[in-house]
Image 1 (cartoon, rainbow, N blue to C red):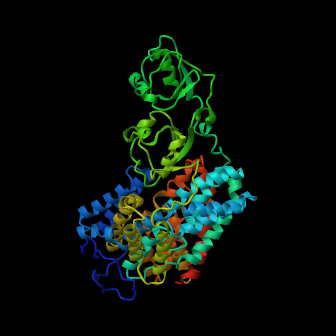
Image 2: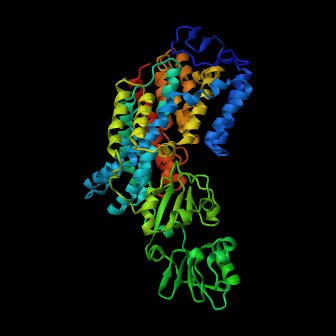
Length: 635
């Protein structure tokens, strides 16, 4: 298990928490050796080079983040800085096991419908005061995110928020970013509130320090929650855009001019053929959504329905392709007819918006490959991704997590669409308890898991794993549901980064970087230096989190934070707490945090909306953390 680092002076092991001895044996890990932290070795240079390459991949999104993390491990393995045993050790790490089990527990609770029913009743308390209802909603999201996977919480609350905004006549764009932020605030309340807390806790424990307690973060997390909610409730109305409501979907997706009617003229090549035989989709990238024939309106089995002269077709396609159709096929464009939501959604059909779920099986797939129309009984008219509306070649665009889809679907297929774990339907919500076999058991198991971990009766990994096993045995969840509930990219990314963190320590890279940062502390009196360095650690982690994922930022900075504490001769724990809170403070970009990306499309936001609204929050959290962390965790 122990690999000698070529060109370095440490063995691949996490240092002991004890700072008094310069050389001592760590049980089961080998000997901690003396070295000069200011010396640049080839191994330090190589690790720094790999980290820079990885950061570039994260920022440019050349590869999925988990693939970049695995590639980093592969490079370290090939260089001899990692043994095979250490390279795969992350997959057996307690944090990884706990995070996977908590994904399963969160899914088990969300499928019961309890959260939707409770939230709907709470928001109706404030029906006479719109922003009181919004405050109740955000408070509920914050508290729930302290105990459940926040992406699952946000996925449930986005439709509820859209429905609430319709009832109180408030633009959804005023509320959806605050919804995402509230889930981030709440994630800092407990050890299990975010995977970052569990990850840093596991790294801390491996370094020989005590793991963080279940509610150790709660005092500072509560302060962050109160400050954050006060900010969003005071300034959301002024700083966030008042964009389109959820009812104007054709306007939101800019479909006017692309969704129109064409008439089949006498002698048209289309007469006597069905749309499939005429190869309209293949040759003209145009979808036939309905066929109007006199007083009849056909919206089902369109691909196999014969077209006759005089038919009017409702089609969706680009202007260029519609012009080609008119020239080639003998149809006339009824261009003076602009279709609106109500005109498209007739005869039992409805136009709805949905987002691709974080753990959706549609991610990476195209609509054509998944035969979307056959499986869901609806058309995808357009896709919105980071502000861009994609209308051409829609069927051949690989879907991404948090993509917003504009769907035209039969109303009687809506329930089936809602039950799908691949999509989150943002309208036509269904609020009711889903009383399946043993559904109430999850209401007992989840609190038991939390109490067991909080009281020290059981480690959080063991407690969460046992809770998931109980639900599987009772049949509350099927094994296939449990597999789908786990966000595997997160698991692989964390499991890959854990050995990377070990290498950062073992090669002396953390101490090399710490030596540079300590120069900042030298500018202050000795009794002030730890406070200044702690503030700098928070700032660096927060800045890094805006560029890469929160877990990647935490695993890179945590070893550095530990080394800084040792070098200053103080307890490293406050610095590790700063890493936890800063890594979760991702408010300035939509890409840095999954929940930010999830509300991007439904809220019709632009990138700068996050920067303008989130920057003051990032600065406020930085100042508050710099002041309060030393109060709750003394040096």
